[in-house]
Amino acid sequence: METANRTRRVLFVGRPGAGTELTRWVALRQWASDRGIESITECEGDVVCAIATEDVLDGLCSPSDAMAMQLARARGVPCVGVRDAHVLEDAI
Image 1 (cartoon, rainbow, N blue to C red):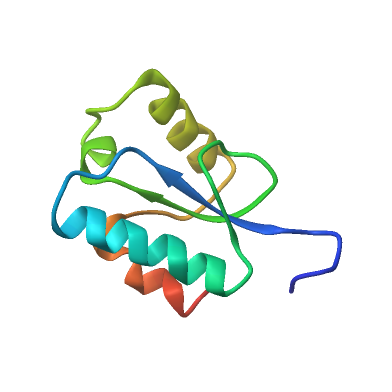
Image 2 (image 1 turned 45 degrees about the horizontal axis):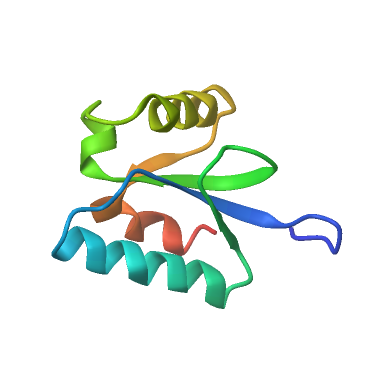
């Protein structure tokens, strides 16, 4: 449950390619914003989930993106790809 002193965050990791992935990425960021959930790129604070590009999930990413995913997983944050993020929308 959200409290006044705690901001929920969704960690977005990677840089989406053009096309469907980018369209979905933008829609997910807007979806989070519409619900008062902050979109972040570093794993800090109350992260409710991590959404990553397919490249990140495949290990084709920058060291900082890899570290963000590693930290999220170590903290037990649910991590999904852009394509599968819809499964988390109802849970957040």
